[in-house]
Length: 353
Image 1: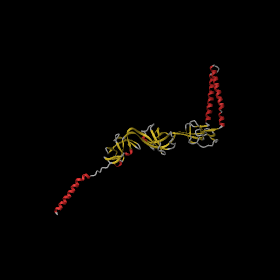
Image 2: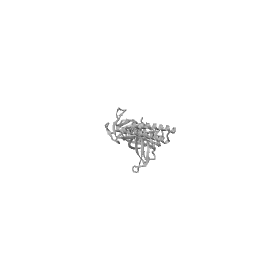
Image 3: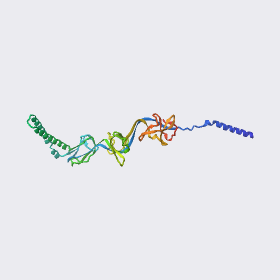
Image 4: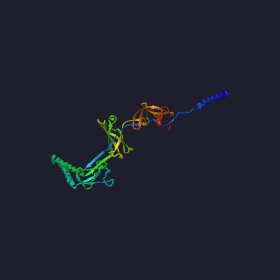
């Protein structure tokens, strides 16, 4: 019986020894590779903005009223073959409205004044010829010249008064207001007749924080976007800057001129304006949303030989989407741009293709 117990203990010891010898072969590698996306650190230009909002207005705008009393006559638009209407494009010099008044025309005495002008010119030429021959005095010649000049003034005055009977477009634009009158209606002097705008160029009054006063100059670029059509961004420039600071709002006024050749923006639209206050060329620029804050430092993860390492960076200019990296990255390094949320320093990673 004793011999059997000894044999059992020897067998158990052999099993334990054999088991311990095979343990290293059964050990499992628990290192996990985190799947990440990477981008290459590259150089490009970056612009820093200060944003504001406001309404845009046409750079050219005019409201024309009748200067005389007359019968209203709306003219035909050559482009449409119909009477001018709201929204019609009008060329500079085109007659939009005529005011007819036969009595007013008669009072101008155009024909008689044309004859007076012709007679005065002939009389002046006659006096000039006589003066050269000694037939008249210099005083006689000057009086003839005065008469000729006065008749020219009378004639020009009549032409100007006659021009008051037509309302012509002073510039090419679009009819914005056109109060309705039936043709033949007698309208009084001073009645508003038509408003014309040219909104291929617009302006925006932008109120900016006073801290940017020293950063902004005339000629700086502005990106203008409509809230109703965010896909269209137009380019403008700062044309005027007020030297006065609003004591209550702590802002200063600047004027922005906007190119609107395709008439994307309409007068009165509410827009967002991003004014370029700083810019840099050929610097390392990375997406803003891949930067994390850790121990009061800004960090990104840089991948090298399958390992992601924390890299403290120093940033410079930034806007809504991008950041300039001044220190901490080299051009060409691989930066984690997706999957970085669960990473730790020296994590092993698998780059997604």
